[in-house]
Every structure is written in C-alpha cells, then in structure tokens.
Image (cartoon, one colour):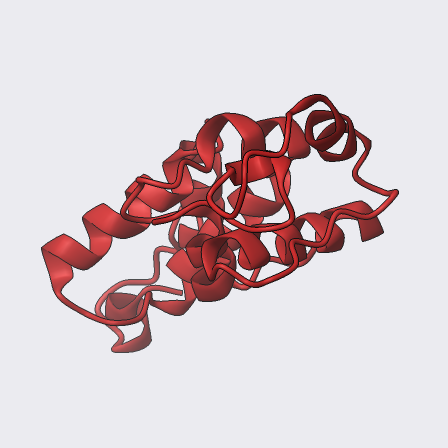
Length: 147
C-alpha cells in the first residue's frame, strides 16, 4: 500500500510493488551494482529502502552466476558484485550460489584464500586454465586482484 493510501488519500492500490518493479528492471548482472551506485549518488543515503533492497536482492539472486562473475566483477569497478550481496542480502537460489557469494566476498575484500568449491565448476575450470602469476594474479591464483 502506498503512503498516500495509508493516509487515506486514495483507495487505489499500487499496480506494481516496488520490489517487483526493481527486480524486473534489472536485466544484466552488472546492473544491480550500477543501480546501487546511481541510487547512492542521487540520494546520498547509506542504505536502500526495503522494497528497493529486496528488489535488488531478487535481481542479484536471478542474475549472479559463475559466468557473470567472470564477466562483470571487475577489480576496477567502484561497486562490485560482493558489495551488492552485502547491501541487498539476496537469498541464494541454490547451494552453489551461496558458494559464489563467498567467492565474490573473498575476491572483493582481498582475503588470503579465495574459496572455489566443487559446486563452482566454471570458476574451478577458469582457475585451472589460468596460469598463476603471483599475489595480484586475479581469478587464477589463491589471492585476489587489487582494487
């Protein structure tokens, strides 16, 4: 129910809940981070309103996959996929996605060991195919990239 309807200003129910509208508007895996960056820049607030937060979380759960992590989680991005997971708190769709969220957090906050489990076959194959280049090697090493 809208704020206007709660105050008795109208009997009309909103046609689309904010959560559903936000979730359906986000179409690519890099869009939740862009949405949050835009929202924070426009409003200056540290948090998102509940419906917006849940909508971004729904979109992240729908769009964040191993391939999306390899493609869109760049070390130079201002807002990364782990930031979206931290702020929007999406519910993992399956156990593999919970492992993916852990992997994203490990990379984002430069943890000593980046966890890649057997439930993440694409990331495991990528790691095996990428030569280890030292501490700043990115996806291919046990350390995370800078940034």
